[in-house]
Amino acid sequence: MSQELLTGHVLRTYGSPFEQDPTDAVQIDTDGGVLIESGKIKDVGTASDLRASFPHAKLTDLGNHLILPGFVDAHVHYPQTAIIASWGKRLIDWLNTYTFPEESRFSDPVYAREIASRYLDLTLAHGTTTVCSYATIHSQSVDAFMNAARARGLRAYAGKTCMDRNAPTSLRDTAQTAYDDSAALLARWHGVDRLGYVITPRFSPTSTPAQLDALGALWAENPHCLMQTHLSEQTDEIAWVEALFPTARDYLDTYEAYGLLGENGIYGHAIHLTAREKDRLAETRAALVHCPTSNTFIGSGLFDMSLAQTLRVGLATDTGGGSSFSMLRTMAAAYEVAQLRGTVLHPAQLLWLATQGSARALKAAHQIGSLSVGLEADIIALDLASTPAIAQRVAEAEDPWQAVFPTIMMGDDRAVSGVWINGRPYNLQNCSSQDQNT
Ligand code: GUN
Ligand code: ZN
Image (cartoon, rainbow, N blue to C red; front, side, top):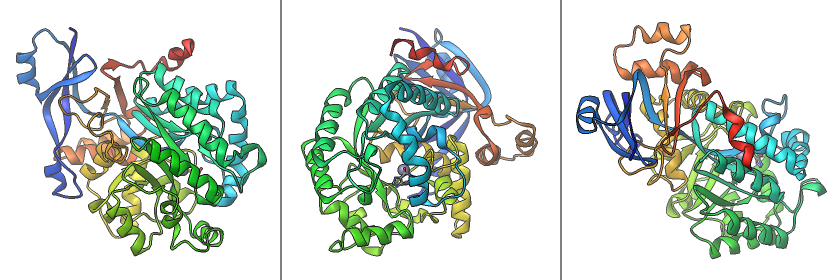
């Protein structure tokens, strides 16, 4: 049985850095090692102990690079790859001007395959090994994504984005077709290799009560599946929801009334929450996803990170409302947003959010998101001196956290020096070759 031993600085996770001292919960072992066997993490410890215990393992010494779990991006729209960084709009205008015309192009399965492949190549180059994506209303956009993720051996999640109002006709389904198409895709993809199907009503403004009800019924029939949607991202959007659902207590209630609130529910953005919504999210053990580059780019607001003390909170790029494919850039934005709210996030908290925090939000922490024995070996290595500007900061670092923080704030894909997917080294130079058979 072939074994590979990675040695270097190793990020270890012992708990949530929002529930205990961050440097107790997350630690960096500067003489660490990770032993990979058959796609899984077989052992983690000090480099010398592992070398002695596994003398026949192939040794990959990464020196002073940081070995950590692959990043987990808990909320993305892969079909928005080609419109990332589109200028000048806030949410509703941005959807109508840029997003909906681009998503209409996914009626063409060839285009869907091209963008799915481009998107996953970009995210892997940035060290992201799992994403949870919205597709478009077209079933073939889910097929394209799942095939591309499967070809690369990824653990990945996605669902058909359902909309039956307030969207162009070419992007509308109905309550019945949303149910039927989602059910068929769920049957086709959920649990195939490392793939998970996610029931995906876009958000309350683009679904009639009948459609929300149909998708609530589908979730009740498949409660093990994740359900993802958007919640309280911008104040204009919240006012629109109030007008569309006059009897609802608040935005969250428009989901709960139709069976779309629960422990396997993932709610993106969740910035402008009422006290009742926060309590109800905690009672139902729902998960939130913080999308900081998106929230500043399209002017949504500042997420309250103290929610991570009571709720599962993941971190995400929200490509292409977010302005980057990089979870490093996303951690930097989370740091900056927290600063604007008067809170300082520790690098241990930022790295945890981008790995185990997001894995917990996706109910996948028993599979990915930390370097723990028995988990799937989705691993990356980061060069902590990847540019001259970063290197001169690291040269003065007095501890491992000081050494990693400049990469969090200023790093990009140049910092990613290695990627292992399910235990196999991934060739960052040769990204698209995996697609030939799909
Ligand atoms: N709300 C509904 N759809 C979207 C989307 O595509 N992006 C963002 N950021 N918010 C949304
Ligand atoms: Zn989104």
